[in-house]
Image (cartoon, rainbow, N blue to C red):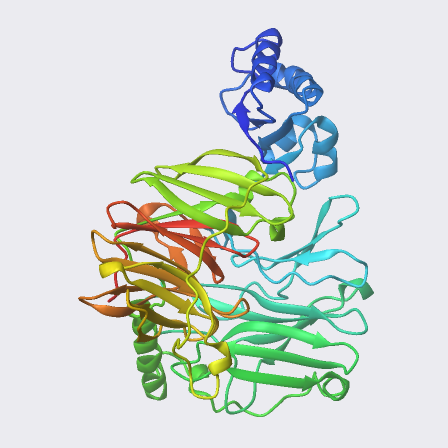
Length: 522
């Protein structure tokens, strides 16, 4: 895995090949190994762009540099290529392509689309759809080419409301190579009460058939609303689906014996008694709508993510040229000063990195992984019957020459200077406390932990306020323009010299560092 450290070069805007070659030579001499470019600048001279880009790419490759370029429909038309024919762009010199994700649906433009379910088909291709589209595409991993298969919905609208968009929330192939899928629909204005039930569909496109919607997905008592997991056990020929967001009710699990269902799938089923299916103006719908609205308000008000005055996520995985992100857990963090965070990531190969003002400023291989010391002592707190997990996993300095100690079972304890142990209590609900950090001047400590396969948390402790759960590392704040970012396996943490900032490193494949300014608990 080689980190990408790049320089920017754009063809067709006045710079000559000789000037670009001199720039690339100087950049290579200081360790630059990537060129960020664009094939869609409106101000670029088309003829010069067509002439110079392949030459610039060839020169960059001679210096061992990768080409990372923005491409669009304009680029494809200009070069006479299919926008999704990545193999053709590769031959032209583009190693990494950034394609705009804007989608249109019934006249609306969305700034981005979430990637939807992606099962592997019987032909070995990866089948893809998105949150704001009903188009099905197939990616051939052997050639890198994407083919648009077509629209998954047989009708333009599944429901009679112009303020919605419908998409596929789950899909999988059965033993015969037929694609089964569940639909989902939101109102464009999600402040409304109205929500649409999921529909069950199938599409035997490999057999030349058209897609079909089989009806409301669920039972007579309860329709599915938001499908979170949709899989088919091909050996047993059973479809499983899990759905949430049905008013304030708990999730539901549906199992369909496809062998039996196929014989009756075109027959009319029972009439649904789920209030979700009533028209929004019907009196029967009001109780359901009120409950749904209350649930949405509570979800927004009591979201489990960490609250802070400012959140700065740093996505380290973007800095590596190969998608082997599982090799990049964050191992250690520390604040050099109030604006600078230093850390080490990696698994078989370690990298030392520096973050200044929320931006990555350096990253380089290192052979050293400094070992953090942990205070060892007996008589640590434990749950009854689980004393065998009363082992120290991490520690940090605390007031009055004491130490804070975390255990394998998520307990936090204070070990006083005389060796006596004071149990603060369970700081992590599942799994160990993985790291602790403290600022003695401000009298506050932070810790992270949680089971690797569960949802980890951040907590704080002070003598004034005691133990506080602060939440999970999820952020989706439009006001900060930081985008969506979420990690559930925190591995380490560090506190700034002022005690106002805490940095969290994670061990999942996204290799993120989150810097929170004044995290708080509501």
